[in-house]
Amino acid sequence: MAWGDADADGDLDLVLGCEGEAILLYLGEGGVLSNTFLTIAGYSGNVDNVVSDLAWGDADNDGDLDLVATMAPARTAIQA
Ligand SMILES: [Ca+2]
Ligand SMILES: [Ca+2]
Image (cartoon, rainbow, N blue to C red; front, side, top):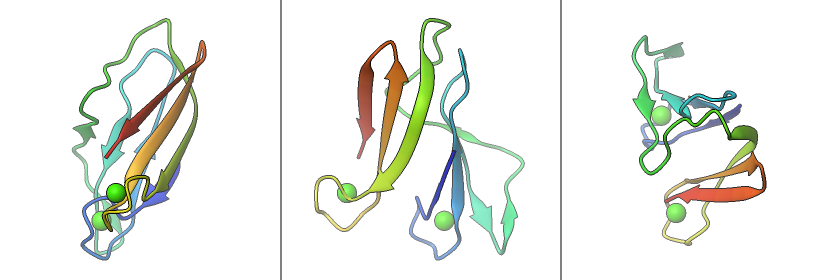
C-alpha cells in the first residue's frame, strides 16, 4: 500500500497490491477515495505473484510520479 498523488490533482490517491490480484489505484477526491478503481496498466493479477512493496517516486525525472512494485518471486515493475 502506498499513498501518492498519481493524477497530480492535489488529492492523495491510494495504490494497493494484493496476493494474486491486480494492483489497484483508488483516486482521491476531496479527501474521499473513489468507489471505483483503475487497474495499473502492464500488470495483471497472477496467483504466482505476491506484491511485496509499492513505492511512488519520479523514476524517469519527468515531474510525474511513477509507481514501483516489487513482487515475489523476485520481479520489479515500474509504471511511469
Ligand atoms: Ca490525486
Ligand atoms: Ca515520472
